[in-house]
Image 1 (tube, rainbow, N blue to C red):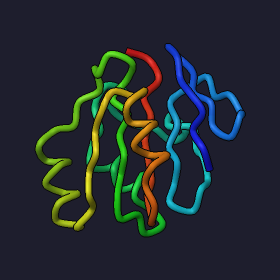
Image 2: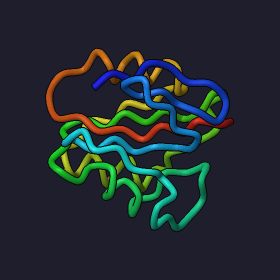
Image 3: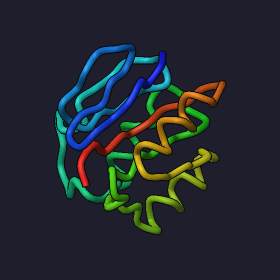
Length: 114
């Protein structure tokens, strides 16, 4: 799987364009972030983090948006630490590069706007 690029409101994965935020699960399945979504689109809640790490991810990459607006509350960081999940959070264009370079069981959430 290769994340090819992003711009405001879109992301390209294996040359397929998604016009919304996405979650990439450890098994490679891509989900619309807003499917069964509850909460604030500019924050990563514990509930949402649980969805992202499904399937045994060891690392979670969070693309915080084109300008880095998405935040990760302390309680979510603590939850992931307790689960022994490595968290990498960067602006979405940088997060894509990191995601593509990682090996092992990884998952991601990419916020495509702000």
